[in-house]
Length: 378
Image (cartoon, rainbow, N blue to C red):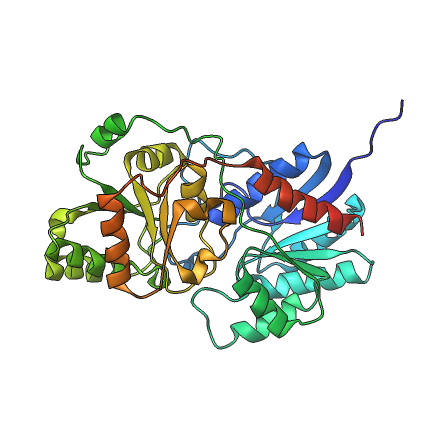
């Protein structure tokens, strides 16, 4: 009996030790493709960014519990010979499809160089687009995004807003819309709420809200803090847990918390939450809040829903949610503290009324994998 030939696919994107949601998505996707009998060539970076442009303390993940993804960490953004070597290595691998993660114009020049190399050799390139434009957009980002993405043969996006942006700059290239798969973290095990709250020194009985991830302007924390003040006026006292590294001035948030007189309702964990602590936070809280005023979709929202937690999320990014999980989601307008306060109040008064534990559905990942395999075979 002849052996089945595995489908060869190359992926360019971040893997451990780099931190963040795109690294996690890439790692999970690689695992799912391998589980679907694909031979995956993983190409990553020697460094993602120079330290002088990275807003956080480090782009390295401090977790000792990690996704283990093997790959060639060979691309340097400032060394063109690494782009050449990478492109040659991929051509020797002879993939049916090359997937490139796209989220920042910082990587425009290397990707343009490699994409031209691939197109001259009739290789199909698909961009997995997390953000058409960076979250904090500069005047040159539209030009660089268009210049880079116009060279792709197809796109995969996670929400309709990104699809519209892509259609605007590249109207003729096929675009596949896939709901963001939920995170079935292999290292995330829900624990007793009593135990995890004790470990984190959190109140044992109050309703706990979680704001999770890097603190950046577009994530709308200011509006959530104002919503907390409105709740206090209504004599409703949930506790807000802010867990993540500040990518902007932390003092302005502390000042606002003091001005609103809500210090007793807010607890801050100001550091990048490593993988081994995820279960502490996601087991302790009752609901996760995403008051985004910009951006596209949140990997943290995929993690929260994958953990079986309900979420409050703004219309700005809610269209990335699969309809199956909307029963666990309260959707509010962006930039609206009153709507946030109303939603939190309704949840505090009826925490179980509209929510069911959904867990992570492997079919979400299978849908994305099927789209990729279809692209590889056509």
